[in-house]
Length: 80
Image (cartoon, rainbow, N blue to C red; front, side, top):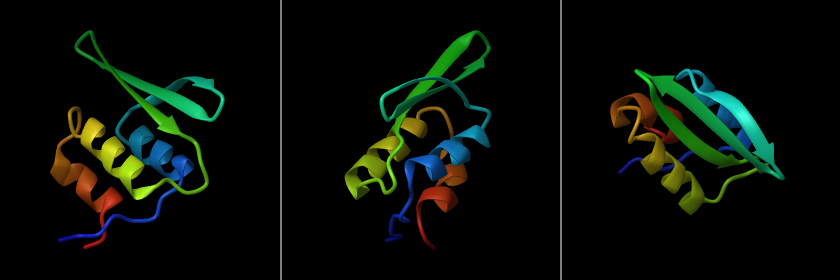
């Protein structure tokens, strides 16, 4: 089974921006990203920490996979 990479909040935000998500707000260390597809808003909240816990990273991956196919996300979040 592939292992999760060690990623920071900034890394995850850059990954999601490559899928056309844009930062819409920030409250404390949490950054809210959104993209609109066919009048449907897709929103994700990412903690902007130096290193994200494995459980947090897995939860972000699961949430993002509702909007982006897992095959596209896999190489960004998991080692081969």
